[in-house]
Length: 145
Image 1: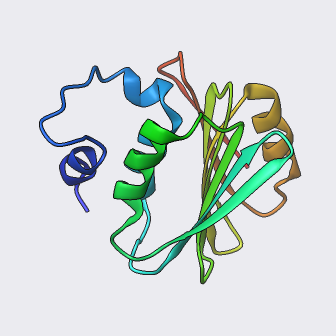
Image 2: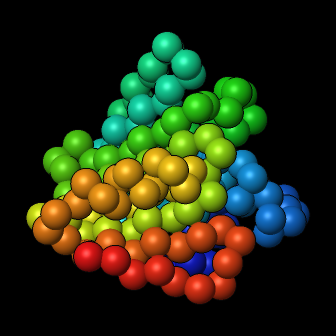
């Protein structure tokens, strides 16, 4: 899927949004980022609100609509995790994120939006794989492992 199509799916009809809002609003950010993965299977969405964890199964073709609805009707979670019901990839977002990790580990692809401290501990735990780390406020790319 092209980023143009993913961007349009992350907007309400006829809505105009500053680009920076995609970085500030977790549901929109995840809505846009998840389209870098294959979405031909049902996706499991976990939302964590402190001790309260909610799990949803989004049917094929319904994830963008659900994320837009959630952005209007649910509070921002502390932590979000998306993955297909059949495995293969994971997308995670944590409140206070400042780093994006893109990793390929043992055949599974990860895209993680984490606070720097969490990102470093995750990166250090990877023994066999390729990890790329992007800082939100820097143009440079850090490549590890």
